[in-house]
Length: 294
Length: 335
Image (cartoon, rainbow over all chains, first blue to last red; front, side):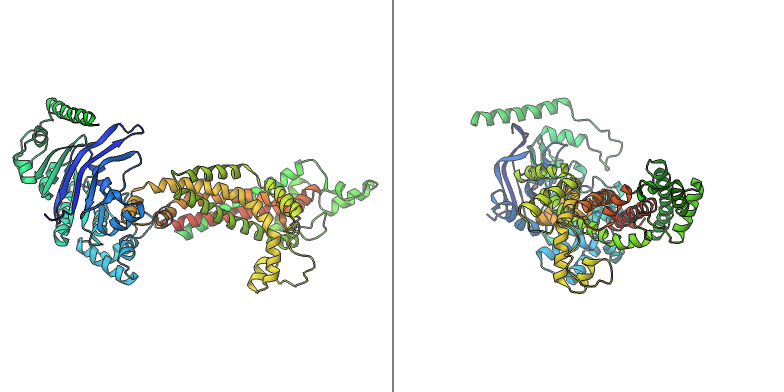
């Protein structure tokens, strides 16, 4: 069996000083090379926590209590900070949620696009400049030469997100984490950005972890997906199976709660309270079993 | 953008300086103390005193006195010092360079030390070192410049006399200087032995002035850096794999210096005020120690000239700071 690009196995994490509030409950998932994997769930489901754990940027207060995160077979959790930085820097990148705050307001776009190239590829300023220009063209930026000289406040939200996508793919990373990259954007821009991420990913053969709360986005861009509730995997599999033949009641309920452009006039149903209750019972049972082991 | 700011600020500076002139002139005349009484002996006759008063124009009505003085100032004539019997402008030109070198060096030092402490504190955040650094900084914040000056005199001048205690340089040095900027000139002309002697004389006063300012800068800049370090762009740079030092200096610093810079401009006033007493303690021949003599002698023309110079310095420094803030912030630069 070949080693997957990313294998998260039995990941557990807790939050709080006492460390008794679980935020991830035995999460396992694998991502193959070139796969777009959706991490879906409501706020607080743990999808961003998983993304941050992979990137090694968990906020203080969240502690991993067990499991492993293996990138091409190497467990990232065993590395010290400096080694982790050197492993992840060139191999894993992030497309952040909010393009308004993710670019340094004091640095020109050129500086922010080329710093990674110069740091990890050892490129000269001239080569890095040429490569950055090429990347901006690749993300279909108009007037790339002018954008290079601009400061972030001179660009629109959609343009900034294109810059961030260009930066994320600049080093030809093996894995890109997209953390709700379209949430902060205008609806009309969202679709373009999604298409852009998909086309960049296909062209570069990059694995993508796509964090979202939007099943519509999952349907549009993901190959496989993991559905989370309160830090526990509820359902996992191919997107077509997940959406057409959902097995878990929660998945079904979420589908009902999602607007469908192909079925206009269909009403939206809130997730029924029984489904939530069932989910909570499942999680309580899981925690009970864990406590029994310990 | 910058040109229009300059014009606007120059206009404001003139108004401010005029206000300063009015206030100083009035205050000095309302305050008790008579310069003539200070300059002549106890046995002077009433007619002698009246003669002197007439000579310095002190017998005229207040408004006329002010008018005469202001007209003089506009022509570059600041009057004659009553106690030193010399042209005020000449005295200022003689003493100001010493104070400028002292204050400039102190300010540079404060920025370097304060900046380094802020960066170090940010690198150490959430570790034990941070609390130690904050504690020491808090202590420095509480010690005023003249206490430092006295402590240095005691330690480095008396108990362990390694540094010269007073003056600007060794009096036996007979080298001619073209300007009054002795330190700058001796460095520029490559006379390093003399420069070394001048620096040795400046170590204690510079440190006394710089340490309290450094503590303020460290505190404010560290706050700014902590705020910037949690921004998304720093997180993204961290994901790119940049070192912690590069995150602080390369990403956070440029967005954190604005408030610190603005505050340093304001604090510079305190530094100029500090030179008055620190120069006195180290017998440093700048305008600060001259100001004390001028006040003691009720030397009205000299005090007026000194206050105008202090005011102009303050305005210039704050203008420079404001321009620097604009230059450092691309959002302001492009209007």
